[in-house]
Image (cartoon, rainbow, N blue to C red; front, side):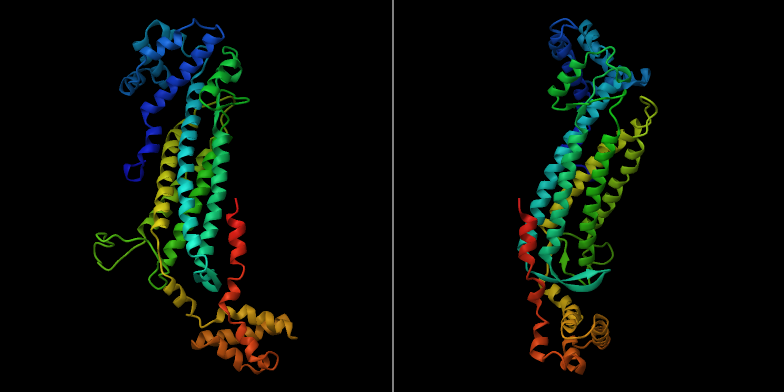
Length: 431
């Protein structure tokens, strides 16, 4: 991931030094276990830990010759440690280290993403409560439908990200496994107790059965979850972009005093953050299909998944970390314009009350088909003439003959559309 979209905390997880440090911690934990079960001499792990030095540059130099990253790593450690290093990696295979490390990195990244999501949820919840009864028009197909509130709109996103949080928690649990089972996963040359010890030490769980690799359906679930979260981010971003259009302007991204929107047009204030989030969502989702395709490895293993994961592991988690933080910032600083929401509500001169009139007509003897035809005719005429829908309704003799004007007037009450808001909030915000 390029620096522009990278935050340091999650970037550090994917740096070479951290990866090699995790490799060393796996080897040391395995050595400690082997000492405990009297497989190697006592004191090896302590001596290795005291003498070992992580030198990424040296490891890469060795790898350029031997063409194998784990061998290069072990060789570099041996150069510093000496004869005790011969007990490292006893009975293990490269994937024991690589897969356990990768899962640990995904777990660490996932925990940062959860922290990001909690911050975002707080931001959304605050806006939802603040604008609980801020009336605005609801839209279906992009067309005015019936009134809702801006708080309700925010509450919808709040619930969606609560679901995403649960999905991510489940996916972190799914990916938090450790395999120290040796070549083709049979434990022929390594005691299963070593795996249990290492897993506990690293706060992972034992992979019940590995081949020579940890099954990639776990990783497919993890990256699919990240893709779903990205889609939720995009849905939110697209909503902001639509609502910021000049002719709508119900909300607007915060625009700094020294900020400039266009190199050519000084008047411009563009929703660049939300547009950026749409782009990042596309990038994040692009990792899902390769992760799914990684599930089908040959027999007990191949390395067709390796190059994919070296890219999507850091890139996708880093991009999502950035996107979640950016969205949280957008929501926290969002300019909301209730006056414009009210103005937009009145653009159609009340035709969104059509359903109330329709339902009332069905209660006084009209069939639904007759009611629909009468109401639709009046609504379309009001829309075409830019005139009051209410005036059209009270001028229609078919309607007036059945429903008195004072009763019709009550049908045009905005509070009718907000009377259940408290119920929705109560059930959506309950613990």
